[in-house]
Structure formats: C-alpha cells, structure tokens
Length: 186
Image 1 (cartoon, rainbow, N blue to C red):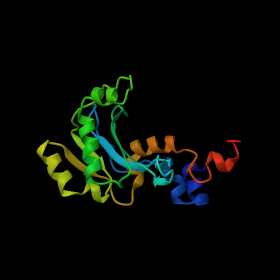
Image 2 (cartoon, rainbow, N blue to C red):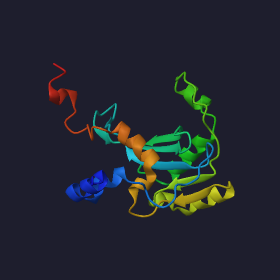
Image 3 (tube, helix red, strand yellow):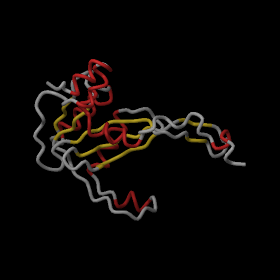
Image 4 (cartoon, rainbow, N blue to C red):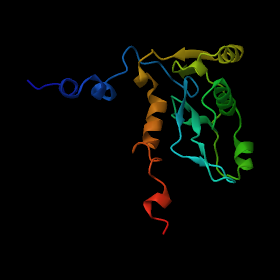
C-alpha cells in the first residue's frame, strides 16, 4: 500500500509545507465569465526609489493589482510610495473600469491593454483598506459585491498570490544588490 505524498510531506515538513499542494477547501466558486470575480491585493516592489536631486533613498514602492480570476488578466494596477490604503484601492478600481489607452499614451507606451470593466465581485483579504466604509459604499453604489477570504487562510487568494510569487521567485533582491557595492561598475 503506497503512502499519499501529501501526507508524507506533512509529517516530514509540517502543515505549511503542504499548503500549496492542497485545495483551499470548501467549494470552488463558480466563475463562468470575465469580471465575475476580481482579486485585488498589494505587494512591495523589489526596488528602491532614489531622489534625483539628493541621490538619497526615498523608499520602496507598493504595487496594487486587480486580477480577473476567470481570464487571469491584469485589469488594473497602481504604483505608489504610500502604504496601501482605500485611496490606492479606489485608484486601482478606477483604472480597472477605465479605458487604458489615454494613460498608456501619456506614458509613451505603444501597447494594447483592452481589458476593462466593472467587476461583479471583488475577492479581498481582510486588510483595513479593504474593510473601509468608503470602499463598501462605493461598491454598493455600483452594484459590486465584496467577498473576503477567511482570516488566516492566505492560500484562498491564490490568483494574485501566484502572480506575485512569479515576480518574486528568487526572494528579495534589494539588499546587497547595489552595482557599486558589487564592484560591477569598475
């Protein structure tokens, strides 16, 4: 009789090690079309912004993204030096619903980003910016349902989490990644 590989790994390495191998649990939500469910979350970008005049570090920017669960397309994003807030979430939702051509043209970027629209449901973690009265009222006014993943269950936010893991697969690269410190600039 063969042992189940998930059970073997759990016993050897613990519960956290097998979490990526298991179902999130409960029932899988029925998502049949784009914009049925959109996940929004934030991450710190692995980059340090430097003041162009004083040449001193200003800080690391935050990226807020909105990802359509059905298509896995990026619907909106906001980059800011301010910590995540109801404002950054609001900007992300506004970009999600808007035509991105004027914004891209203003940046001098010649690409198509045709995805836009109003989601039927936002799936969020339990951070304060997602529990704000402003977000609740705004979504209520526009007929957008809010749904929150269970506390302590980060694997329930898998779509945007997978996106971040792909971008940060090697971990933080800012510490000690200075060209001058490495001697590569000589």
